[in-house]
Image 1 (cartoon, rainbow, N blue to C red):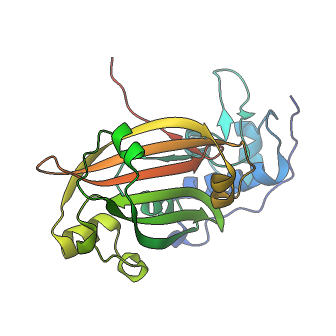
Image 2 (cartoon, rainbow, N blue to C red):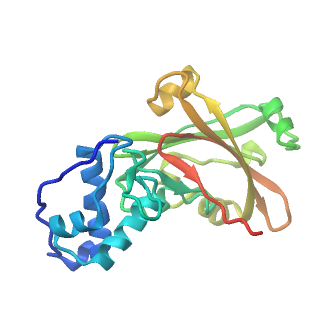
Length: 254
């Protein structure tokens, strides 16, 4: 593993609106990793960061914890950090329909595109695999894509499990509200929770085009069903994520 000997950086807390110093330092270190390091390189020691950025050890440790949590570095006690990846790892999957919001809260430049609103033939095989009982031969479907810095990172196909003649969703409806808010406000369908199944797939031609990745690239596939308080299944979403920058974390207990 190579060790980098960095040059001194100009870093100062000039605007409190930019957030706590440790968050600003974490952002600066991420940029440094992306511009100067390769996977497997030894990262800066705390002493090197202190010398280069002129910040306290407490600030440095908080910043390094963020880098470790997001997958940029790997640390073992008594050893120098190792750069584990150049691209960010996004932890997600905690709240229904809140992906874009979660990404923005992490300071990422996020955009959402909704498209292909239409009524299609019910995909019986997909529904059967998810134990979805649906009485109509057609279903309302739309797609959406989430991008970070103009790079697509997730691609979803959403099915509204209701009489398709009653659903009149369009792109303007979702410009300022998420799907679940619109369903509650406009259709009286209140979603309270959901269940999801996460798997791994390889990108076929359609998915490679939707996510701007090479055919055969690893993807995460999430099948999510949303429920009303009565336990009715009202939304089924199939979401694919670029596996190089997404991960799902879940707290488990002994």
